[in-house]
Image (cartoon, rainbow, N blue to C red; front, side, top):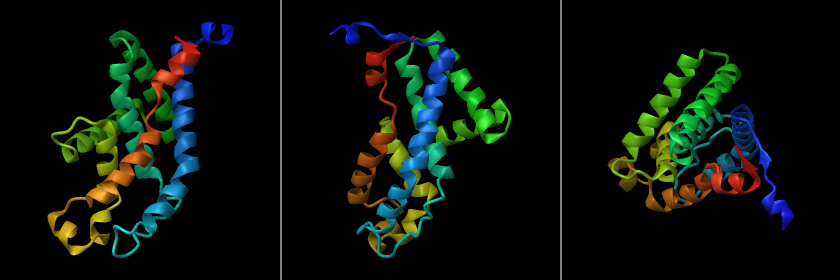
Length: 178
């Protein structure tokens, strides 16, 4: 009972570190399974042959999706502070300037919004972005290939997977306070 009352207090920097490390850890540990699953998915007429090491697009999709929900999770000034720290840490990881990584994430967020129009659901946007960034259309049956849209059955399965890559802030706030 007292464990739920006493929450560990974290700084914005610690939150950004936990956030970034957890995202990269989940991408690094999970992408191989996702790639194998997609390569064997019955929605495709032939295997997309996604390499289990080809997770760069996936990492950026996960980062962009999670940054999208930061603003709705924190108060505006705290969201700005945490987001700035996240971008600083991403710049170090990707060995580029903070401005460059902001630009890349902004492009991904814009792409996700465009392919997911008119929906605002971040998980759907992540699934559709994955579909297009990994050029999965060419492996579908002719009907969906001609329409240039993901097979809805594949998309539903992909949504379930992507839901696991969206940061659970409710669970985080039950354990920590900022």
